[in-house]
Length: 339
Image (cartoon, rainbow, N blue to C red):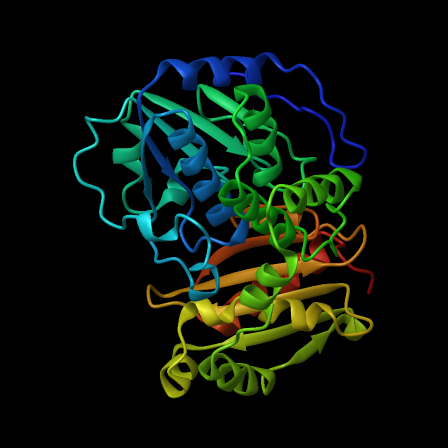
């Protein structure tokens, strides 16, 4: 096992990487691939997985993309979305799994053990909390997205970047940088996005489908959730809540909660935005966003989660009130914000 930093997104320069070479050579030799990512997949996870599928098909490899959860409707337009399977049968036909955007194999979901039993695991990820659990690990916490790391691998493989690959990688980059608003959006992210546009990605189409096609159920949910908006630590911490009752009343889906935390983050004076979602299994999903150098990944790791400086997540057992208490106590204990 080796992890590698192939250059930060702030002024990324192509560098020779032994692990990049090794993974590329391995992919060339293998024939049957399973591609997967984490539960409740976001734009980076989905875009990277679908881009990897098209890359493998371009190399005349057999490839299956498995996701435990359905692709949210806002990403259903991405090329390759229709090939995704949500049931994983026998895995003995696969010789290699490409695990994307996962800092821990348990993040795959219920089939993690089955996925891990496949002979060779290639892990491509940019989460700071990744400890290099896979034998073949390409990890760079300085990358804007997993999509950026996949782009480096594509270059090593010498695969032509088709419009189908381009739109998926562009989506991975634009969503994981918060539309280029997070600190991860360095010069490399902009250069990569520009190249994907040159290769066929259409920014206005991606923006319209992801950010400007909200179903009415999501708007109804937003209206209800805004009633829970609250502030702590002199207004530097803002939070919003979605309960199971809200989802039932508005007929909204869990995927419709995506982006709600960013509304809180946009409020003047808020340094840390917290989104609490009551889950069916008796836990609370906590999404964290921050501005500038405020590091919410330290907060997520405290509860077994992870992520990045400005965007992280975790889960806490108990109800929303208990989750709030633990998060606020930890913000104070870790001196995440002043006051």
